[in-house]
Length: 165
Image (cartoon, rainbow, N blue to C red; front, side):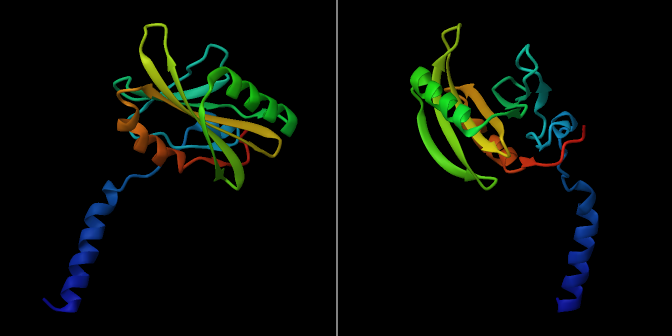
């Protein structure tokens, strides 16, 4: 097969496959709060808390949840105090990473729910432009690693944008 034939076949394959490429869809409600985020494919949007302080996406078989808190105003002192309280109450494993150009605190928290099921929470918290951002990945201990990659891939779509309000 010559070079022109290979190029022709490749171009044809691209044209045939391009309609099947997956485009990222961002949640419009989060965009109103200045957050661009694309949940894992097939995950279902939910509001996990009655106070409507965050928005969530659950695995179709209820195996895991991603919860994103709406950004709220905070200064460095109140942010540091909330970190101290979290450390005292939950005793998490902790690490710092850089996320969107800011220091982000990542906490791994083990807890047991009211049904006696052990759950793991990976909690991301960071301050940007005097706003606190919190992103949680929550799953049973048994399923945590199974859907962690889905969460991490979606986390890579998280951006702070100009709000649509």
